[in-house]
Length: 331
Image (tube, rainbow, N blue to C red; front, side, top):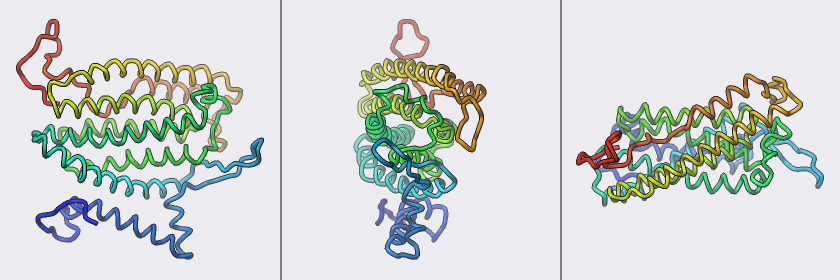
């Protein structure tokens, strides 16, 4: 299985060898885990990589349902799906983005940003669809009070926990991809910023048992990010196409308002009225004033942009009445 066409060979395990064959190496590791399912001796260990751990039976009115909580073994599962994500990243790059970029004849700077936006469009679209399905099926949209009622939400449905594990795997895989994709040094600080912001917020919602609120906030955030990167791709195809940027600017303001309002409502009012106001990590309860203030401030202060918010292409920032300029904006 070769993801990239190679015109020359590299010394085994050299830097260039790893860069050009990292997806193939990841595929071999994933294949070893899958082969482990075929043998009784290794099946238990293989399931540790593939399936979420820490399942418990929770009694309900209709009987019992299987839920999950988090623990150290989740790191093993996340590691496995990091390799899955690396493989999918290579497939999208090889069979979609590279073919499109060859037709567009982009500059080196635009080519790098085209690949970045192309990968994020695929990720954000799939995440929005998946997240919306989870939020609807779990009833978080029809019953907003469920976002803070019965806190702490220690026990998670399978689809909620699996969603969070895959989200963590994606953003963790983005760190080595900066090396594998040979991202320009000027771009690394900006990309590291939004990758780390997503990791901190997703991991925070998962570990602080705010998974329900985190799902809704991610749905809003990913929706605007998808629109932005779609507009960016359209700009690379046609530099006169600016309509989607106007739509993104309007959607960005609305979704930020919804995110801040929902965060204040859930954390400032909902959790503040919950009877159990104590710091008890063993029971998964982090509903204290300090944690609430930190979570609310973090949500309000950061917007986790997956790209810089550029001025409209071809317009000079600060110019009177948005006068046209002749210089080209390379963003």
